[in-house]
Image 1 (spheres, rainbow, N blue to C red):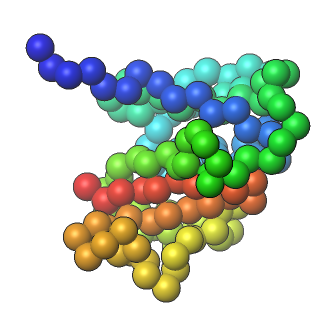
Image 2 (cartoon, one colour):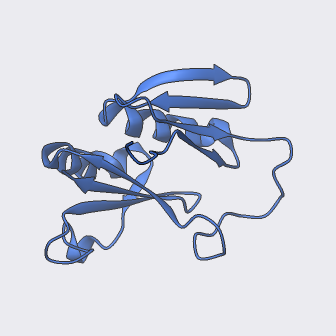
Length: 130
């Protein structure tokens, strides 16, 4: 029997309307397809069937997200190197900042090719080249 894989990840984010364009762009660039949409959330599905949900839950506490607190630090996704490069280059015009730019694309080490992106609300996504 194969080991289990991730079925989905659900992220509660503030200011959904403000964040949605950046997430739509990112998942579109990665080839993920819109999956579900409702008044306070949206999801995108990868080719393998896993999906990511972002939602502005009514139960969300009024505290800014900080990846350095206990909880999720960042979301790491895989993509071909050409897509990692394209996304990193166009991230600033789509609501994302390239982190560790002075060490890009090897900020994770000499054998790790990735782009580390952060949106205005401090949420980080790591795109790892396959």
